Length: 245
Ligand code: SAM
Image (cartoon, rainbow, N blue to C red; front, side, top):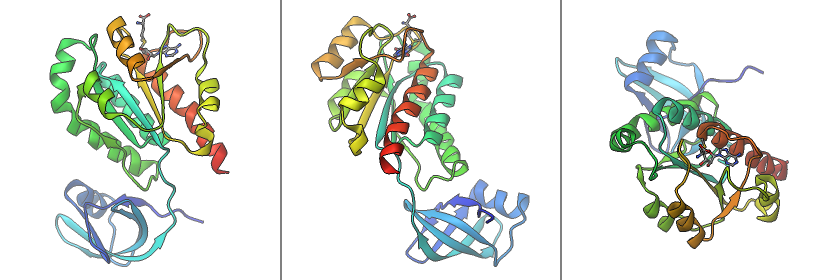
């Protein structure tokens, strides 16, 4: 069976959807789509089979034909301390492909000053990367990318589920063991936090401890933050996917 190309609608209501701007231009001018062609369309987090009804200059309109079953995101939130932007973007793209639900960029003590300052403006770009990666990996939703925020703020807001602090200095508890213990297999929500290139400070480690986060390890090697984020997400994803099948 040929898989239909999947789009994430810019505008929608109960029966129709539309792509605008760059997405519409790509569909019409690059892919040369014509009315009558069918696509998968994600509208408001729901997945539909849709038919293209009208191509104007910068808008493509669709009729929503039938709702289809969609795979939900993994109930995983990543607290990613802001690190070098090219690597940060890579982490966001890959975490999106792997299915995370939410990413919270955190300005950590050892986040380089110029990156911390530029992070507020960078969020729009991160959201665009997540959206493109979601579409490309045929997700039916786009992970939420929150505004960059200080660790204290992020920790105060993060409540539900298991809370795991990825730490290169943890020697005894492995991530996989903690996941078993925290019953993520039963679909419980999970938050994982990753430090910047220079790691967490002692003070930050205490903040995590005060909020009952548990330190876990990915093994004896020191990984770059983005490697740690992707590896941990893949390991946790395997737990959820196994439980679902
Ligand atoms: N400060 C450290 C150093 O230079 O020795 C390096 C920090 S590491 C580059 C960045 C982040 O990746 C860490 O804060 C941690 O969240 C995660 N990380 C790296 N290696 C890890 C490991 N073996 N286990 C768990 N987390 C790890």
